[in-house]
Image (cartoon, rainbow, N blue to C red; front, top):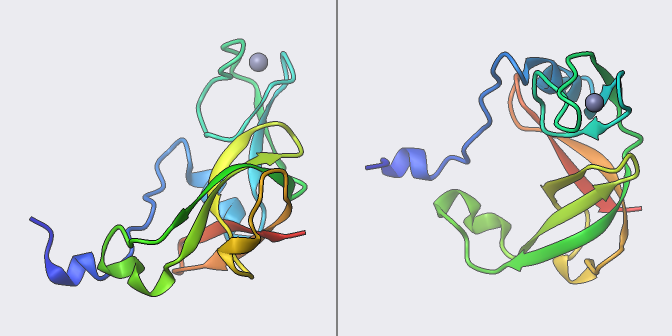
Length: 139
Ligand SMILES: [Zn+2]
């Protein structure tokens, strides 16, 4: 069972070999996408190979930071004690200009502002020395 102390803390990502470069990029305020040198596919979820062609020649490039809200949901009931101070907040599925879609949260305004196709821009929230989270605000 999770302790009350742990439940009061937000869980943080744990970088591994496949994602270490991605998290380092975020520390420098860059959202790195993997571009396949073989087929041109762009992927957000960090993997050792291209999901489109299986190629291993993946190159990191920073995303422009521009995107649109593809879908969203406003959270009114906190998933745990650590999130009580955040409600209500909008969990958004952002379609990045480069193509990939990623889950994030809306910041810098009321969740009521969020609509489908809302233009958003990437912003960075440093939550620890190791972890900076990508979030989005209205463009
Ligand atoms: Zn490929």
